[in-house]
Image 1 (cartoon, rainbow, N blue to C red):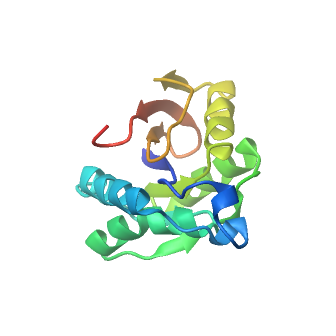
Image 2: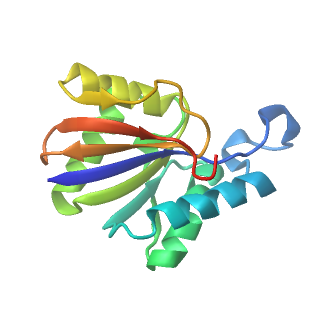
Length: 157
């Protein structure tokens, strides 16, 4: 059995308000508070690996959790904005072969595609389809496929 926590990055403000490449857009003060709440909510989980899209806001969303657990946040390009859901899901499932409990941080377009792909492959989905920032899905796997995906709202909301 494996477990994947797929988190939507915390608040990073609007694209237009950031003067620089969007991939470098950092979390806002609100986003850092959300990231801390995520770390508190997931701090009892014994993660084997933490993965994030190459976007700064995704890595920063998992940094408080990484600090609390003494883990690094590894970059995973298949979680980057615009990635295909089937490819993101395949990468996450492959990683759970070696690291059964994984957290990944991605974007508001990739996560719904990934959940839709899991459902297409037979997973049962519990919860809503919309995905606010700092919310996540918990995916239960048998090591090869997703059995179920459960939505969790942003902590403290």
